[in-house]
Image 1 (cartoon, rainbow, N blue to C red):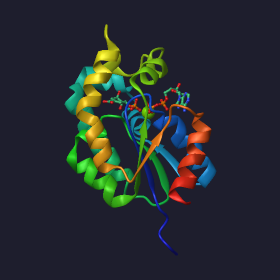
Image 2 (image 1 turned 135 degrees about the horizontal axis):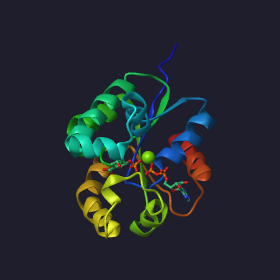
Image 3 (image 1 turned 30 degrees about the vertical axis):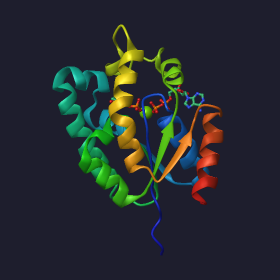
Image 4 (image 1 turned 90 degrees about the horizontal axis):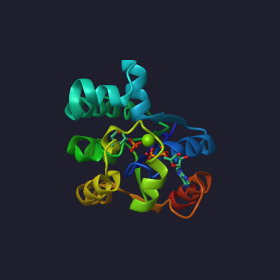
Amino acid sequence: MAEKRNIFLVGPMGAGKSTIGRHLADELHLEFYDSDQEIERRTGADISWIFDLEGEDGFRKREEDVIHELTDKQGIVLATGGGSVINKAVRNRLSARGIVVYLQTTIDKQVARTQRDKRRPLLQNDDPEAVLRELADTRNPLYEEVADYVIDTDEQSARAVANQIISKIGL
Ligand SMILES: Nc1ncnc2c1ncn2[C@@H]1O[C@H](COP(=O)(O)OP(=O)(O)O)[C@@H](O)[C@H]1O
Ligand SMILES: O=C(O)C1=C[C@@H](OP(=O)(O)O)[C@@H](O)[C@H](O)C1
Ligand SMILES: [Mg+2]
């Protein structure tokens, strides 16, 4: 049987990776995974707690391990965490194991979509917008580097973006 393709979603916090990924998997009848959810399921701890206990470095190690393991599968949609691409081994692994889609959005939308959610430890401070801008400076080139496709998520619903991904990739 022909190998089933994987689709990996990358992009910044609030781009819609987790939400759009779920729609995409439903539409394509693929299994859906989210690296953050998988880390939480395996550890029984939430992401903020892991950051508190192990620091960002500890979280990044878990993230790398989970992504490495999940990308062994075939026929999955994986929503990565926004910071996973800072690790070159992760970027290489994503490129080698599937189609990488960069979900792009504006800082304003990121702020709006993340402001009521207390689960992103990097944004629990006085100026989350400044943090998002700083992260964008270092990470946007990495999303670009690893992406096979770039899709804007600003103007459409999450479901519509999922359908746009399907037609753009030609699945
Ligand atoms: N295209 C979209 N339009 C409007 N809201 C969206 C869209 N995509 C995601 N959202 C909302 O933005 C929030 C963050 O989405 P999420 O999927 O958690 O982003 P990410 O995983 O990239 O951080 C959620 O409340 C989600 O419902
Ligand atoms: O950008 C980041 O460094 C992070 C993004 C989050 O995932 P989302 O991109 O799904 O919000 C989560 O992995 C963690 O809070 C760190
Ligand atoms: Mg997410």
